[in-house]
Length: 386
Image (cartoon, rainbow, N blue to C red):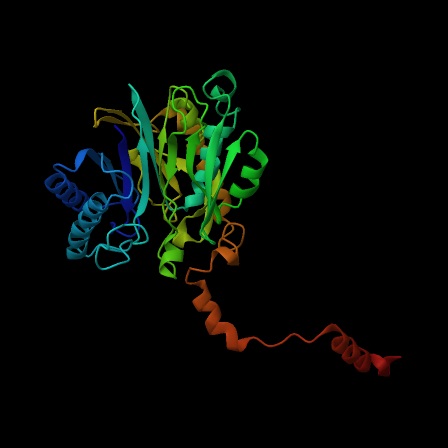
């Protein structure tokens, strides 16, 4: 029987600014899910990173289930009411509609779902990011499933040797393409390097995979809230589900993709580049310059519809070096203030508040005189000195 893993997340208010979720809000969401999930979910887990509340759900309803989506939506609405009562900042900011309309897509919350054929042991990791955008997963997902220097199983494991198939979305044109690694490796890189436009949505095994033919093994939330809302409402703060082991990247190979704090877009006001720092849950609050961007990894095992775990995978001194490097990068970038490339380029600032500032300056702009006129005036002003 197919099993569905659904991970749905939203920012419905935080304490004191965009720092961390408020425990009474988490409690309200958890109580709502517990009360209304009987007969629908076989198991669930509530978690968070920064100011984003996350619900991981196991069920047999399939991807895009109206009942499962409505459960998550109503749970977030219940939490929002608590957030509003205590005056939390940004209460319900990711809930862009007033009422549920049958599918949570396009309504604000981020969604990552996959239908799977459970193995005898079904381990997976849920990665949760805050203060960044969907394309922040492009590099680590590529490294997990296509880079043999990160994942030696691609070379030495016969089940991985033929590679994987990537589903890539153009989130500006609402199009998608599927490309396979290793034969389309350069084409994949050519696209996903433009992480503000092209994002990895899913990864599949190849049909020739001995243990898991043509199975979805990774999925990422990709909705871009600024494009949905038409104005800046925050970066998407994406999440991903990644299956591991037994013909897939090992847990250590998956985690290794975050061992270097590469630069991602988002951070303060969604307008700056910064290092992605892997942290444990105890360090998942956003402080310095509303960040820096962070990623948490929770490890689970699924059996007969029930979850064991999670294990807080980055709560480990083995990632202290990555965290130190991230802090060094923060110190370097912050000295640049509002200058690029610390601040994002204009093309990425379209949905922030910067355009409103530029609008007020518009009438003060004057046309620059062309070069020939300037040269003629200069000649006339100096002829008396010949």
